[in-house]
Image (cartoon, rainbow, N blue to C red; front, side, top):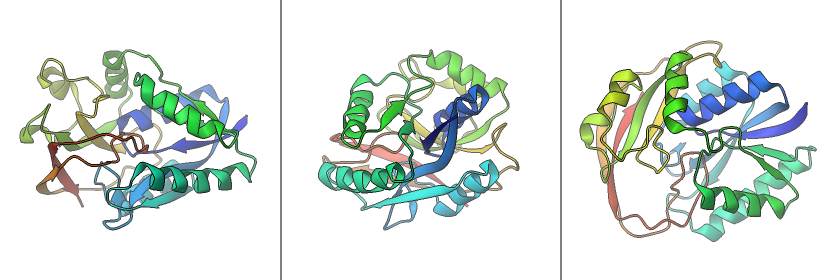
Amino acid sequence: MKKAIFNWSGGKDSSLCLFHVQGAKKYDVNYLFTTINERYQRISMHGVRVSLLEKQARSINIPLIKMMVSEMPSMSEYNDQMEINLNKFTEKGIRNSIYGDIFLEDLKLYREAQLAKINMKGIFPLWQRSTTDLLDEFIREGFKAIIVCVNERYLDKSFVGREIDQSLKDDLPKGVDPCGENGEFHSFVYNGPIFSFPIECQKGEIVYKKYKSSNANSDSDTCSTDTNYDSGFWYCDLL
């Protein structure tokens, strides 16, 4: 099998993608790789505590590498840090970087361009799959997840903290992607077929944050894109 890193967000797309990768047995995932807000010690955009991320990695039994970035990194800062970290992987003979992207073409092109600079290749196992089918598969395979962040442009406060199940799918408003591929929501997966034990967690405080137009880490699978937010987000703190 070919050596690879897996760009891990802790959410449902990452989890289902890793499930597919492990089943196909084409790539040997040497490391999970996650972008962390250094100030708050949480997964960027998802807002999940590093302690829960580390429990996921232990349950999956794959070493975790964390890339620390500032609260609102510029593109140049993000790209510089990413190149430094990815070069460390290439020094270990790892040339494949796996992502859970589904249909955001500009994001895929961005990733591939950055990887090409250091002679790495992007792997996209879920690319152009139906997001409705993927969510159905996620639920059918027994994954358990909680919505930890919603963009108020698309979903109201009532959705944050909800379990991802058939009831949630039925309640999603028209125009909201079933997998939240447009940034409508982010999730934390606490159980499923890729885990050796469930991640114990409980719902804490619901908080609201408003982001004015600035560079923000916007992608659900740990990639920064130069997106100008002028929107609010509801977060469910997991303890």
